[in-house]
Length: 354
Image (cartoon, rainbow, N blue to C red):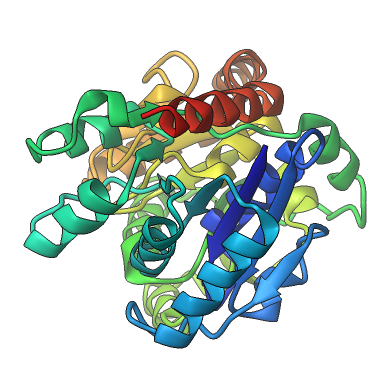
């Protein structure tokens, strides 16, 4: 099967990581190529690739180059992965008579008329990584259920086992809590920092520390908040890490505090690498975490609930170990790379037949 992924991101993030994992896995048995915008993304792919400007949703040069690439390479299915790509990729697919199966990794309500054109008229299918996203899409009333397929993110666990041993990281704090992602408001790091401060003030705990891995527009604001709360020496901003897995392997807990998510790769990776997980209910995390069984689920903005969760886990190594062991078992059971690759191909083939 000949598949073309499109990712016009300007920086590396979770969607880009998913695109690389999916494309790499599928390339083992199929002809897979990529259209990309920035070298920070394209340099991470070892498959045939084409760099286009993708300057806007209506970049005519990029549109017609996509049409040429699809025709010249005999592409059978186009898989765009960013919102900007849905329109350009969808139009290129329509002009060449091939299906577009878009990938949506965040839970977003579709409120605008033009979104119907992208998600229904242009698309032949939609891949989502959480049932909650499928439910949101069905609430539009215009996307039929057969057009949506939940395909969980797959993890290359052997690769994680290898990468975690490269450049090992000394444990930053006796009890280490980690967050990973772009430093933007929607990731909720201000919520995490304030909740951590509440936990520390109430208990006087001197062992726990917070590590935030990543870079982004709000880094200075988050660092300022930590300093204002007297946590400058208890919150480590580790910056962007090309290989964050030694950091995750040295961590005890992993926190996802986003306002809006799908089912983050970083959460699944942290669970596999031995972290007790904590997550907001903002996305599909409850498809990996059973609250009180292998982790903690809570509402975004509930600082008291998060502070108490951090306290319970920080004060109980036994509870951390139990959650971590069950979390890893869940990943091995449900989130394999082989399963993800097989289901993507099956769904793409089914949409070709429509």
